[in-house]
Amino acid sequence: MTAFGYTLMCEQTGPNQLVDDAVRAEGTGFDFAVCSDHYYPWLPEQGHAPYAWSVLGAVAHATSRIGLMSFVTCPTRRYHPAVVAQKAATVGVMSGGRFTLGLGAGENLNEHVVGAWPQADQRHEMLAEAVEIIRPLLAGETVHHDGAFFEVPEARLWDLPDRPVPIGIAVSGARSCELAGAYADAMIATEPKAELGEQFAAAGGSGRPRYGQVPVCWGPDEEECRRIAHEQFRWSGLGWPVNAELPNPTSFTSATASVRPEDVAQAVPCGPDLDAHVDAVRKYVDAGFTHVALIQVGAAGQAGFLDFAEKDLLPALRSL
Image (cartoon, rainbow, N blue to C red; front, top):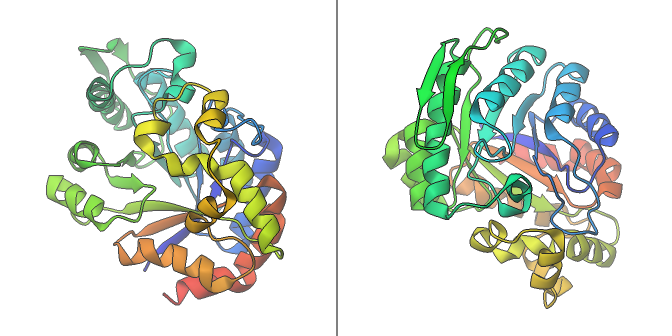
C-alpha cells in the first residue's frame, strides 16, 4: 500500500511555522513528512530558507508517529559527509528511529555559498564517496578515510538510534539510478517516470522503497491558485539540468521570465477539484512509487490544504 507524505518546504515557510505544520500534518493522518534543505529559495517571492536540520530536530521532538526525511541533503559541499552522518544519527535518536536520510548531488543554488560548483560527473563521484563515509558511521563503526575528495582521519558517532538510519538517494537519470541502486536503501525522484524505478531496480534496488514528490496548489479559487503557483513554483518546469546549475534566485527569476500561469497549471493542479489532485498523485502510484509526498504550494494555504487532506484527499488517495 502506498504511503502518503507532507512536504515541509523551507523555501516558502519560516522555521516556527514549519514545525507547527508538521504537527498538524501528523494529526491529519499523513504517513511521513519530508523537509527540503536549502540555503536560498528558488525565487525571491518564496522568501524563506531556514536551516533544515534545526527544523528536523524540532519536528522530531514535537511529533511522535510520523516518519521524517531530508529531501534532500547534499553531503559534498556545504556539509562534510562525516557531519551529515552526525546530523542524521541525532535526528534518528530524537525521532525514535523515524528518520530517513535523503541525499542528492545538490544544486549550485545552495552549495556555491562555500565555493566553486563541480561538474555533474564529479558531483556523482563525490556523492558516492560521501555515502561510503556516512553509511559505516551510521552503523556505529570508526571510520578512517583518505579519498579523492574527502579526508576523515578518524570519526565515530556516539549517539545512534537502535537501528541504522536508512539512506535514500535522489535520481533523475541513468547515472544517478546506478548510484542509488548500488548505495541506497531507497530511491527519491520528482518525476513520475517508471523507467527511473526500473533502472534503480536493475542497479540493485529491487524491492526497496521509491519516494516521489508532487506539487499541488489547493484552494477554493482556481484562478488565485494559478496565480500563487506561477508566483512560487514557475521554476519547477526548467528541469534538473538547469535547476542544478543556476546560482541564485535572481537567475531563476530571469530564466522563468517567459513562463505563463497556464504553463505552470499544466504541471501543478490548481484549485478545489479533488479529482485533479488525486490524478496528479496517481501518476506516481501507477509508476511504481511506494511513497508519495505532496507539496502544497504557497505558505498561506497550508491550513486549508491540511483540512482538505484530512477530509477528502487522503481518504481518496488511500482508495487507490
